[in-house]
Length: 183
Image (cartoon, helix red, strand yellow):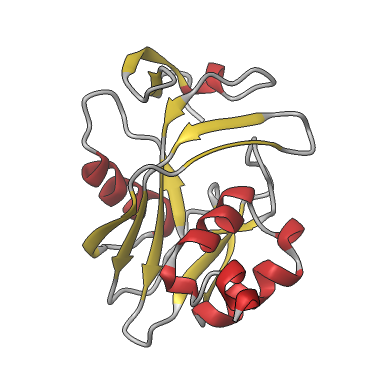
């Protein structure tokens, strides 16, 4: 993580209130800031999941969505998605769809580091095979979305908290669990 990489700070209404170095933001008292997540699908209808590199500051070694990140100040979210797709997993993505524009979460990892983000969630497609950056991704797999949903429900502790929460809201993973139980 670069000391000069900045993130956009937000107030409780989601309005920009400033910037801060990314390295200073993720700690025990993380300020609310802007991020994004992206779930990438291939032509076979599979979704890409990645296992975070073991030296990541937050949730090291945990399975998560295809990739995520923070837009730089003055960078559009879609530009940031394309930038991180190339940097993190070596993909060109297309047909971006803003699936959860108001997704927000706060979570604390085992080391006490807090994530506190307004994190719009995108779906995207690719014809490429991933070429992950080893400083970001330890492993990756293309999986059937319904198989992933079953794993998330059975072992949520093995996945990032944001993936678990997003999957509960995305139709990508089939019928939401609450609806499935009610039928």
